[in-house]
Structures are given as C-alpha cells and as structure tokens.
Image (tube, rainbow, N blue to C red; front, side, top):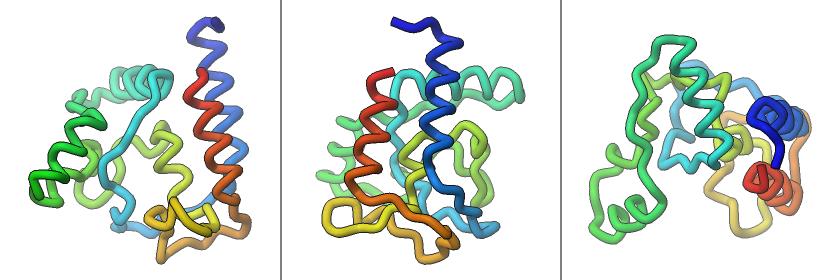
Length: 138
C-alpha cells in the first residue's frame, strides 16, 4: 500500500485525466448526495484544515438510500459543502463531482448530465467507471 502522500499524488493524476469544464457561477445542480472514496476524505480533511473550513457530516450511502425510501426533502440530499450555491471544496471535490457534465451518456449515468456543460471533450461511461475504480483502489 502506498503512503498517503503518494496516494494523493496518484489521486491527482487520476483527476488530471478528466477533461476540464468550468461551472456556471451560482449553479449547484450537481450538489446532490456525494460519495467520497477514502483517499478523497483524506484529501478533503487536509483541505478543510488548511483553509479553516468546519468539517461537516457526510451522509453514508445507506443513509441516502434510507432517506430516498422515506421520501425526505430534496434539500437534505444536498452536499454539506454547498454554500450559497457554490462549492466550498471545489479544488478537492470528489471524482463524482468532477465527472458531472463531462460524460457522454448511453444508459446508467444519465443523471450526471449537465445542462450548462461547456466541455470540449467528453468521456464515455466506460472511461468514467474506470476512473472511479482507479480512485476506489487507492
């Protein structure tokens, strides 16, 4: 297993494989329930500490599923780091956020399409799944 510093370097290499897309100011369409992989949580915690941002509770996948089944308010599903329709953690946002808007969808990930995307290059669903798996393995 690589040490944390090497794993974070590898994480950034994976992130750099994702085509760039500029978000529209004030848009928070993609700020739903967010799943962080373990190494992304490490990255997030370092960023929060460095920038003096309070750590907020992230919902587990099981909790999100439970809330969906109970038909809870959509607002509860929003990422806790969405503030004033902006992302407080944009530089260290997880891969699922980075993929939003840059994946050409055939089937499963259609809910990750962005109506405001200005991406010049897109990934296929298969490519996006491979990148998510790479992050998961870190």
